[in-house]
Structure formats: structure tokens, C-alpha cells
Amino acid sequence: MCSAFYSMSVITRSAASRAYTYLLSLFNSRKFLNPLSPIAFQTFGSVQPESSSRAYVLIYGAGNRAGSTYAHYLAEKGFNLILIDRDITPLTDIELSLKDKFGKRASSPHNPVPHIPQIYKVVINKFDTDTLTYQLAHVRDLPVKLFFNCKNSKRKADTKGAHKRYPEDDIPKKGIQDEGGDFDLAQAAEEVCNREEIQFTGKENIEGFACLVNVFIRQLSVTFDNVALINVDNHEDESGDGDQIKQGQLYYQSTVQFQDTFTTLVGRQLRQNRGSKISTINVKVNFKKLKNNHSYRRQQELCEKTFQYLGLKETLYIN
Image 1 (spheres, helix red, strand yellow):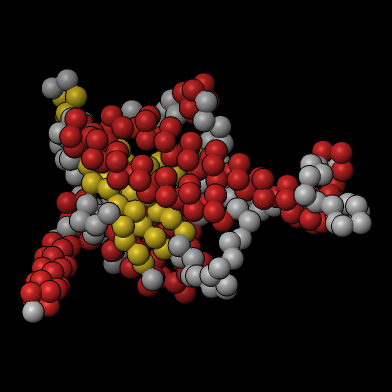
Image 2 (cartoon, one colour):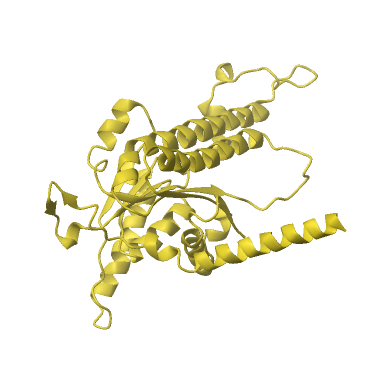
């Protein structure tokens, strides 16, 4: 009897908590999606003109589908953009897309002229002090309100030409010979590709995220009232044999777990040590489902739910 009563009590409290969180989420977005803040632009007693008094959104990994989705959504909300990736091409594509969109609206007699966002494109694939200092010199003092970690875009591996790019003498032979002692070049090429994946995941995603947060942490902690650190993971549908782990999958999952924990702890540390209110959230979404223009509804859902539950949940899953 007591056990049943306790279970019912726990269920009731859980349901009440979910209902309360849902009610808060209905009004949560507004405070994060306001690009204007007098705090950010009062410098040495002077106030900057309204044309420049808009917050910036920094998106690391802007070249992938999640990063591009957030960039378009927040440009519509009136934010300026700092787009960072390892390749300039996807960043330029986003810039051209936004210029085309806002240009058409500005020329339409039926629509008011919108705020055309200022866009800074930054290419970074090394995270040593000298590189960061040089590449971020023109953006590191801009007022950043929202920081997104969407993961650096991955270059497509040329698996067909792997045997040409990696001479036989350079391929480690341990574990890539069959029982007869013959050298399996195809398997060796796959192994090298996996090692590239590990380098990409561990070096660029973990180190890149941590280094960029360190650079922009001052702006996030003192510039605005409602600032946020948002970590976005590619959460693919689980399929296949659940008892088998693909090569590199375990390592990848450990890096994802690190970034999730890092995001949450940064927010807690700032709140405890500096009294700064910084909201955090880890968003899990299947990037493939954001892939084409037919996914507009899903893209909107990703952005809207992110800000609805930002600071209310540690982890948000978008199906």
C-alpha cells in the first residue's frame, strides 16, 4: 500500500513538473530572441547608434545543416552573425542566401525593409594561440549573445583515392593482414580514413569548442542579461544490430558526452562564480532530416523548441 502510494506520488510530482516546464516554455523564447540590449552598447558612458546596437550570434559549425538552419532563423529575428567553419564555401553560401532573401524583401513594395544582418565569416581549422589571435582579431570584441556549437563541418573523404593519397609504406600494417599474410589495401585505406575521423572529432570538435568558448566567454558573461550556450549534436536514428559498435562510434560518443557535460558545467560555473545568468542546453537532432528545403517545418521546429526549452532542460531531443 505504502509503495503504491509512494509511486503515485512520484508520478504526480513528475507530471506536475513537466506541466510547469511546458508553461514556462510558452514565454521563454522572447527573452533570448531580442537582439537589442542597452547593456551591450553603453561603453564609457556613451551609447552607440541603433543601427549597430544589435547582438551577434556566433555559430561554430555553421557550414552543416543545423548551423545553417539557426543562421537563417536568427537573421530573420534581427541578429547579426559570426559564422565559423573549417571551409569558406558553406559560409559564403549562407551569406549569399541571406543577401538574396533580404534583398528581395527590401525591393518588395508590400514588405517593410528588414534589418539586413552584418555577417562575419571566419575560417578556422587550427586552434593554437597564434591562429586564434589572428583569425578572430576582428570579431572577438563584438557583443555575442548566443553561442552555438554545431560541430565543424566534415570534409568528405576520398575513399576511392585513399590508396593514392597514402602510399603503402605509410599505412600501418598492424591488424590489416589476412591469415595468409597478404596485405589488404582496401581495409588499410578504411583504417586510415577512420583515423582521420578520430582526428577530426577529437581535435577540431572538442578543442575548437573549448577554445572558442574561452575566447568569447567574457562577452557571454557580461554583455547581455539573457545569454546562452547551445550545443547541438547529430542524433541519428538507431538502427541495425544494437550489440555491434561501429568503428569509431565509441570514440565519437565519448566526444559528444564531453561536449554535453562541458556545456552544462560552463553555465553552472559562471552562475556560481560570477553570478552571471547564462542558459545552456544540449540539443539532439537528426541532421539528415534537416537536409533539404522540404524540411522547412522540421527546421522551424528545431529552432522554436531550442529557445522554448533553453535553460529549462539540460537535454532536448528533436525527433
